[in-house]
Amino acid sequence: MDDEVRVEREGRVLRVRLNRPEKHNPLSRAVLARLRAVFEEHRDDEALACVVLTGTGERYFAAGGDLRDLAAVREAADARRMAEESRSALDAVRTFPVPVVALLNGDAIGGGAELALACDLRVMREGAHIGYIQGRLAITSAWGGGPDLCAVVGPARALRMTSRCEPIPAAAALAWGLADAITPPEAMEAALQEFIAPMLKQTRTALRGFKAQALAARRGDSYEARRADEHDFFVATWTSAEHWEAAERMLSRSKGS
Image (cartoon, rainbow, N blue to C red):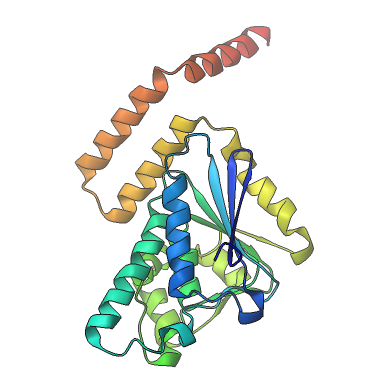
């Protein structure tokens, strides 16, 4: 399974790669369990600034659930268990304490689109699509991706995408908020580095505070709970040595001008 989900550390960036391109990077139960384990293993790594999740190849980021692996899931109890286990894997992505960036090297469809929307941000290759095409199999989304989609594009566009099984191309994805940047195929790595560069300048506590606010909004936490979290992270960052060093640098530049 380590070969199907490859993990590399590059400084403050953790890179996770789905690596079964000959089958379009399918999300079998074993792959999803491995993804969950990877994200849970690294969630307390305070040196990390972000995670980049991508796929191998040029055609697919991830093509959804592995139908051969799931063919034996027939009864309601088994389907419920499978959906809950898969959703918990994507929840490990959603709740990771620093930003998770999906680098969409190709199409993200079905469960693969749910995985892409479980990430906080998406850098998308020109020519790629995001499609909630579960209806072609006469099923709905199952892994928490439906609420994610409605939150990102709104209920009307979400219904359009799901009821029409409509793959959304990169340009429209950018306009709708499904993508945060698009890039030519030959410039994907450079575009990714440009996109995450500002994150790498942030302090550990500030990044975790920013992600905590985004996660609280995604969970639907109360207004007061979100304000309390913001207050706590502000106090932690304001009293940190990094803040006072940054403030001193800014004051020094101001004096010099």
